Amino acid sequence: MAVLRLGDDIDDYCIKCKRLTNHVILAIVQDQPAKVRCRTCYNEGPFRRGDIPPSKKDLRKAALFNAVLESIPAAAPAPEPAPDPASKVKGRKK
Ligand SMILES: [Zn+2]
Image 1: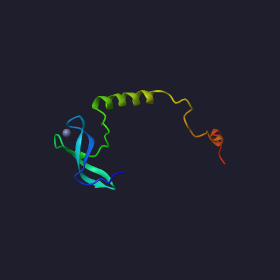
Image 2: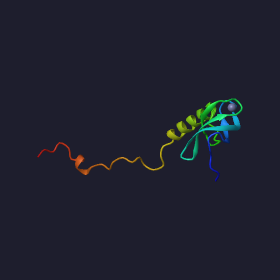
Image 3: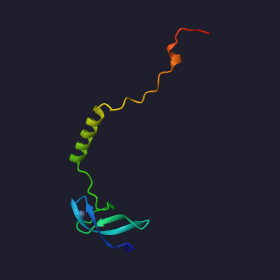
Image 4: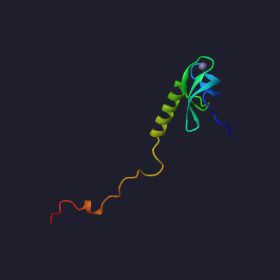
């Protein structure tokens, strides 16, 4: 793998351009780009490894999906603590 250096060009997703664009590496942490600047709009941001951040629409979908998941009762019985046999004996005093 080629050694990355400050000022190198690298492809990454630009949130302003909303697409993959050429970026300049501004900061490197542990041999990984940490901060980059879009060569098209000069927007600076963290290096996203080309990952496209989820849109608000996708986030809403994910929230709905999670809500549906939570509404489904678990297949296995809820992990409640086993009833203590001693607790059944009530009203008995020493
Ligand atoms: Zn851009």
